Image (cartoon, rainbow, N blue to C red; front, top):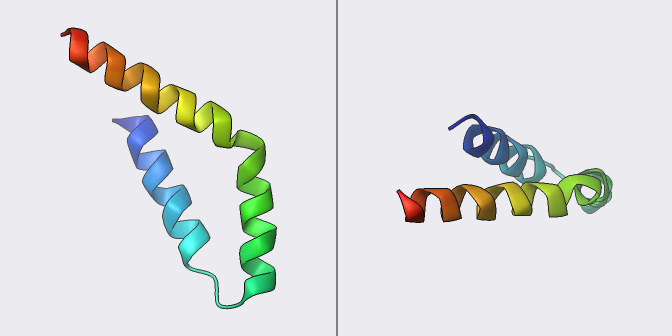
Amino acid sequence: MGIEKDREERVQWICSVSDNKELEKRYNQWAKDYDTDLGEGARLAGTAARS
């Protein structure tokens, strides 16, 4: 549940910008962790499916 909350907060953080320059800056910051975030979600989904 914690990872999902973190992801939701990150999406809100990205979407709360007021201009394109700030959006680009935040997106680039998130890009560093995006693959890891995506991998954790896939891992959790696989665990839930096996339960």
